[in-house]
Image 1 (cartoon, one colour):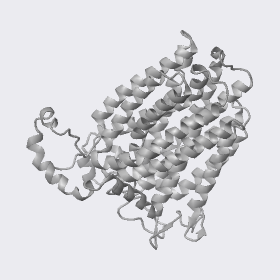
Image 2 (cartoon, rainbow, N blue to C red):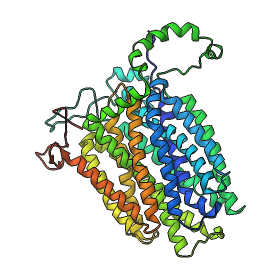
Image 3 (cartoon, one colour):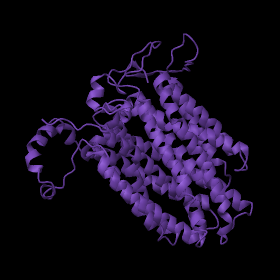
Image 4 (cartoon, rainbow, N blue to C red):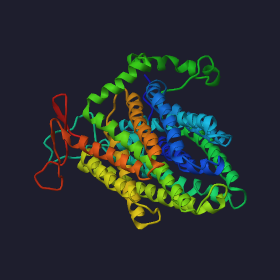
Length: 511
């Protein structure tokens, strides 16, 4: 039987680039959405409601397709879904410029973008699970040794973190993979910062040589073209255990298929039971994994991670947009004076993503050293403080606003890394299905924050952040809940165990 494909440096770099590029495109569209409505379509009121409705439509699509995409990835491989999703993102961004009205033009185009972005983003979890179970060592990026040599020497991220003071042992099949999970945080943070620093200023730069409306449209075209070329790079470099073949055509495109067919059939026979499962059966397995309290907490964390990301990319720019229009600095039909609003929105979102980028490896260390539950507690505390702070910050140019977006960035990356580490720390037969349900839970969070937050933002701009603070409080309570009691572990106090445990099937599993 042929050996399983090895995870190479190229695969790792392509995975990091997939996280980087996907987030950069999503941040660009969501951050420019308020300005697209005002500068391109000439909308003058109910901007928050429109953004909320578009966000709800976006997430309804995401919730509908993410579980199926996750189950599909168990069959065809995450590589192909991710690269196709990035390609579709590029096409949707270019088509976005054709919109003439909010309904139905912008709505239809946003739905297309939602499908594409979901395909690309939902595969991050599945690809991280592939990376975590591959034995790939981050040190190999800086060593001229093969992965086999490194594994023979006992190196690699597969080593367990010693837990000298823990009363409970880890599941032998799992490991804390905070460092590997932080790769997503670093890559997405870089992508977001790149988007804020390169993509978002495009309308202002192009506005020096053409009208603001055309400048914003041409910015969408430029970013769309970049997405199309990015998808080609991902199709070449991403890792996949599965070989995608087109029936009847593949033997003409790949002449060696006939030679390898018998060997591949033998390999596929080992996983035939899983391959024969239908999509709905795979989805059921993804939901059934929530009986593991660790996975349930990961789903809840994913819910809040996506909610926080939307607040960063949608409600912070909307907060800036409404402030400048309310003060009369900007006005519809006179977009040339809104350059400062673009810049201020880019500054605040840029600070948020930069803090997230800097803290990504820190959270990876915290997850591995002190446990994912303690990391989740720290994250929710940051989320509660920053959400309430932004809700009552009246001026986006104030020092208080800058401090709060720093805390917001810490909460955002903490939710992402901790929740993804919880559900990707071991090889599971249905990682794709888990990835799909994880994305579905994230979509539910976005659905609530987008519509309710967007509608309420037309009456009070702080409302979306109050809602987000409520989500953080609920997650904090869920994190501290152990069986029938609330338990808070203080890892820095001698004699107190450095983790918070949850019961799993009458046993206690450390997370």
